[in-house]
Image 1: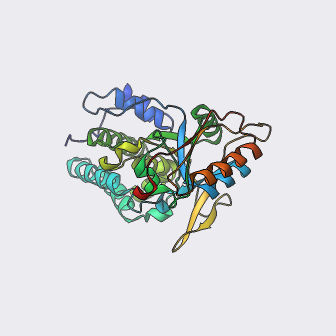
Image 2: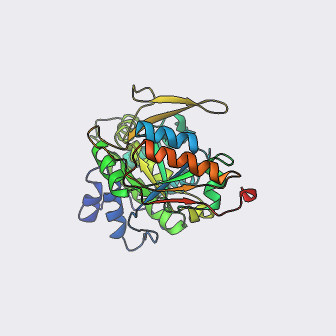
Image 3: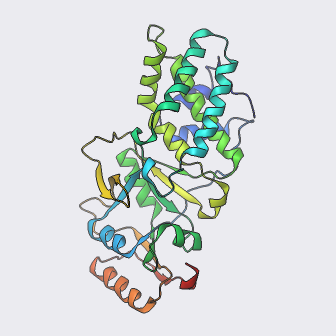
Length: 320
């Protein structure tokens, strides 16, 4: 593993990398580093597909809103573990390599904060999409038995809404080389911000201040790192700015054993008449004719004028 450079380096690309807080800046910084390659960098394509249930699709069409779940309450309870393990490994290496006392204390304080902060109290909400429109593993993992649909949304529209709301978007990384490039980049940014805190500030207070400013970017990066076994999903994640769990905009829905915090993501402005739905796939079901009739009725009721395709999944229902 390449050793993390944490001292000096205050010019050129490092300065550009530290400007702002969006993920595009981090991607540009990675592209400038010969030792850290993002081999999975790709443009955002259209449409983007969201796998869900028939009843949730009806609610999305009726309300023009999608629900972005808190990162700690997503389907896979171990979402952050892979990225977190990489981050801690690099950070421990940084602590061991530093010789300047204050920088060493700052790095150690950051490690302690990350190691002890329960992920339930982070401030990141995520909306998930896939480039794969009809994938067996997606039907199995993200839709209820026999009642699944895949909704294809125009990516330009989703991006526009995200920019207005201060969200950013990031493709999931499945290969270790790309994952390390992203973890290295976000950690370098955090350590630089710590070094730039006023020297009168105690190390622990500096860590808290940097995490307050950049914690959402950190956990958004970690949430985009997934195991290679899921690479066929080609997932994109739209990541919120920092939103505290206690904020008035946070709502809760019931799950099997708890309540799931979520925030609303508006798909349309009030004056817009058409939802940006381009395609709909009907998932594996024992009653395809009945389901097609129901989906057709919803298309007519909610006037999906931009819809270009309604298709039925040909994967046998018994495989689900």
